[in-house]
Amino acid sequence: MKSANPNLTAADQRRLARRLQIQDAALELVMQHGYDGFTMDDLAEAAGVSRRTLFNHVADKESSVLGPMEEDEDIPVVAEFRAGGPTGDLMQDLVITAQRIMDEAQEEDTCAVERHLRVEDAMRRDPKLMALVDARFARFTALAAEAICARQQWPDDDLRARAIATALLALIRLSLEELRDRPDNPGLGDAFREVIAAFNDCADIARPPSA
Image 1 (tube, rainbow, N blue to C red):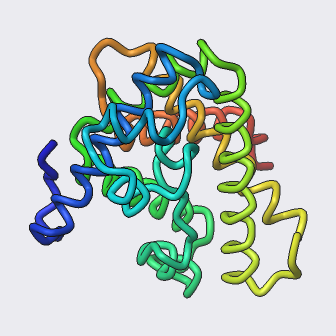
Image 2: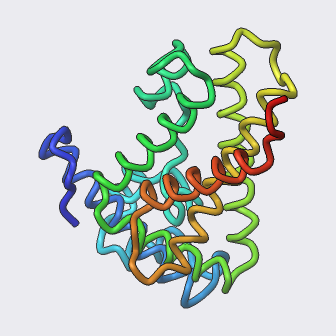
Image 3: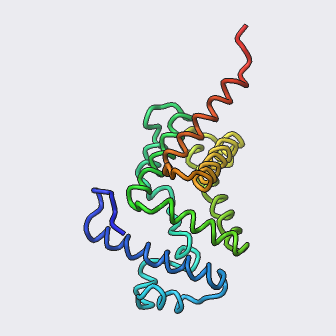
């Protein structure tokens, strides 16, 4: 796997390629044996790496299968959002930030869509993996709500922030479903843009006419 992101150094590209190699091997083991049906030693052997190298790239079995769970302070576009950027409009900036994160993920991994579809196949085979994905989405929702509260200077756990974050993650999940059902494979960022456009159309239809 070669990254399409020119901002990555050669060392970063090699590290990313190794991590994705490990993820591909982990997904194959889930498909063959289920999530609990293999050990990290099995994964190291399947990925063709030592146990030490394996744990240099992934923290545990969950991150080997689903990828790392980054905290939002590690993502520059999220820091910009928390500071009030890029436009100053909360809802617009939330959508822009989500789109940038998805576009950057696609740039880093040109096979990101195919890899996600493999995760979905594995989820259908093993309900435990589905529960892990649901828990990860819940964590993403909590992080998004916390970033919104920090930006807006709202109290922690503000209901408005939770509602906005929950709606955003629901739209992202719908975008992932679109990828599964679309033979043209538009890419996650493009699928998300289409979902947002459809959502905005619905909002316009539902908006009562002005007096």
